[in-house]
Image (cartoon, rainbow, N blue to C red):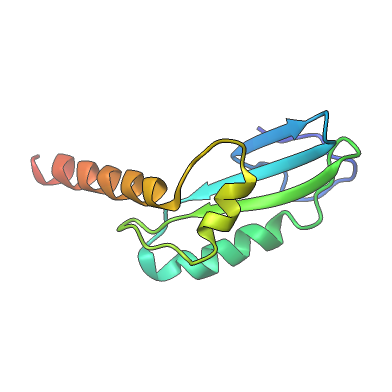
Length: 111
């Protein structure tokens, strides 16, 4: 669903929005599970897509969470996850992506 922003921009549909009214910051979390060869380009695309977005007169930051379908991730993934409230580890996110890929393969191959 499109989000109202301080000014009109094309990319205004992040996956998750975390608005911290106390610290006056807004985190735009965009998640992707591309082919392993496209992890780097997908992460760069997500950062550049939201770089001009400003919301609710707060400090806004884009956080890309990009993990390849077979668990490939860039070294900076944990740094991005540390910015998100909670205690997620890169290994957990990689495991989730890998298990869901296996689930899709099992379902596809069993038909």
